[in-house]
Length: 158
Image (cartoon, rainbow, N blue to C red; front, side):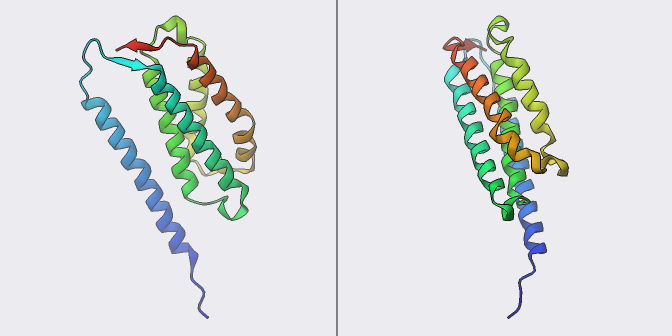
């Protein structure tokens, strides 16, 4: 029986993952920069909490994928990591509308995560240590960020 060569399939999956990441990022940026912020519009704390929840779910999914040795080098890990990176970027952008005195402790935590996840396109990012980081320090960091966000006012005016 002929064996299916998986290299072209892996390449196709990688191209699909990169296309998905790029398309979502372009869509998000287009919507953000085309939207007209009118005085009096609000950013709600719940929007930030939804982003935190989405990040936690993506981290959970990534961790589960990495638990299986067959999936450790899956191109879809790049797509998930790209989505996490985008969520942290959006979280940072939206939290800046809140009063500086209320977010001064949260911003360094978010920036540390943004710096870490920005490396998602680097091949070395997906080493053996990543799964441990997902389970321990990154999970704790997102819980800390989420807890700090819960202490913010209900909304902030743009």
